[in-house]
Image 1 (cartoon, helix red, strand yellow):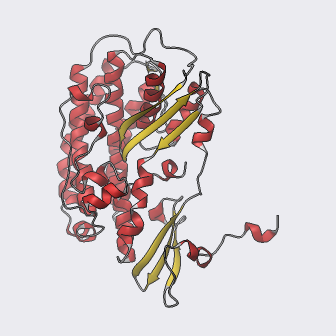
Image 2 (tube, one colour):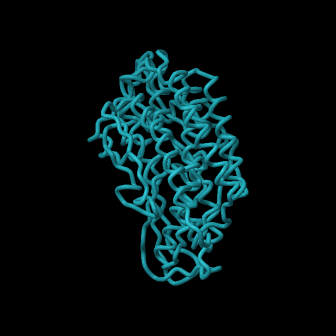
Image 3 (cartoon, one colour):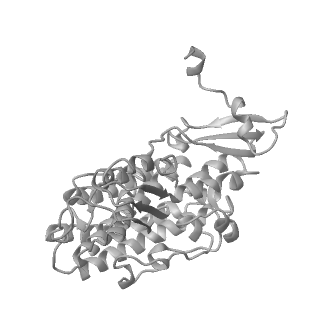
Length: 386
């Protein structure tokens, strides 16, 4: 291979990726993958007319790891740790999607106590994810202090989840037929303290950040997304609910014990960056309510089914299982052929559909607004470039 093959291509060389012809009076530049607001692994090729965006084209491929191919070349147990590396901020949601699909296809039962433990830990992980998004989004917009508060609260949740999972980020806690370890009274007591603490912190977050005039000016009226456009691109999660569509997989396609729990689906009819921000902040409150209810309703019993197989054999057939992850609807589609390895594994990642919106939302906006729009989509690139 020649030395020239190792030289990164210039932004102009990628101008052909843009959806229309590039004007001679415009400038083509790269935002990312080194730009802080793209968090290291996303590149966006922009065509600019001064400070205004004429066209935007996301470029993937910087962190591709072939998860779906790996899923077809490993047993179900060996592939399960991959799920914690798809959306590393809400790893337990992808844990749940895969074990749920395997359990559904193989007919594996899950004890009722394990279902409640899954709800408790998954919602705590959702809170952690939203807190990191909150702090990182404000950092992208130029505010440094909020991320310190976010990480202070995240540390408590990560310490708690580490007690039962053994990890702080890339969890592999759910297993076929239950969870790998039971929770005890100490876990429950600490979880209640965290719920109480965060409930007291949310009003401070609102006064300190949400009602800040600078944040409002950066987010209100920017990146407007209509419900029809959101549906056309397959947007889910807070991005869709920020446009007034009350779709949540926990209600629309009920799973586990979520139908027994009382929680609201926060929405906003405005559809701009601020609406998506407010939906996520409201979801923090709802997740706290879910955790508290699940702790109150937690039954006695086993944390894993006594007949759960040590080696899963998938029967011939095909199934899918969907969960509501922090970024939207995460789906695992699974096909078995009677062997220990899945014949086919397909991941439906919500960030992929949400990223697809960015070129349309960014067109005609200021370059500074592109950062606000991109952050409001709450993208995790490893689940897109998987």
